[in-house]
Image 1 (tube, rainbow, N blue to C red):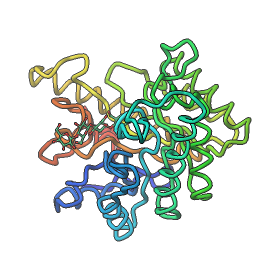
Image 2: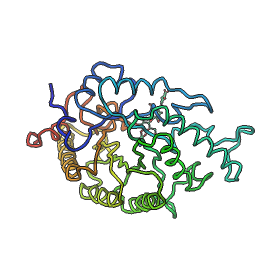
Image 3: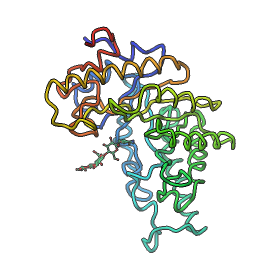
Image 4: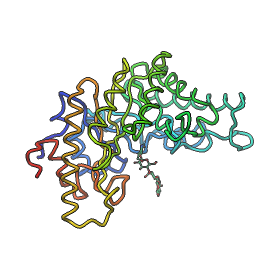
Length: 333
Ligand code: G3I
């Protein structure tokens, strides 16, 4: 048996993985999950389109299976994600009578706020005490907007208030759950500043937020490890804010394409492994701040990055240099 990753880092942080439902029904996947990971995220199965496909019709059977799996195997579970501009059914933003898009009139705002409240209360209270951390709001910042806020339907109808409300509703439904703001490219200095301001303001207003999720969809060339550390430092300088690395993967194909020869591929996978180990060394340095690190996928061919090699195991379940770098960096060439 391979040495266990979560065991290796147990004095520092949880080591998690995002998996599609099909992985929970595949014995080979299950064995790998149980061996290496002590936290799980549903890759798509706890998003609004999965949980409330039609207004008032909740669909919890698959999500419940994740909970059963985690309970049986003593694995923690992160909830992903309550409020997002993607994978959210269009009925949320439509007038129930006319089917037209809601506006920012008081009446329409109330319709959407009620839906938000009902959704969050139903989902979060169902898993109260079981899902220990929630990504409450995902990807609300867009650094290309003059005010930094993504112009999603949530924003267009409710304004920035939807963010506060989401945290308040989630906290009411499970006062012990850790509540996160989650985003990608958090190493971009301009975006990072917007996120920092947002979270600082939420805290200052007494909104129940406990952490920032760094997705960490990165590549062998960007961002640098130093830039990731700067992000951790900045966000954790806000009192009461912890960090979860929520969706890490390291692309090699983004810059180099899918048609690389074997030599180049080997070289890039070694770079990937070294970078991953350097990152884990930084995460270890911030013990008690970085409390969970989750990979966005179990093996390369499951990744949302098709044709890429961003994860710890290859399509044949073989551990890559990236895996070994986390166990013993001296074995990586
Ligand atoms: O469920 C349908 C299926 O019925 C259909 O046959 C199939 C054909 O394309 O599509 C299936 O839906 C896909 C879904 O994943 C489930 O596999 C969607 O097309 C596809 O767009 C969706 O992609 C997911 C993506 O979020 C959506 O934006 C990825 O799997 C998932 O890894 C990705 O995860 C996100 C995080 O939630 C947030 N941060 C970024 C991260 C990567 O994009």
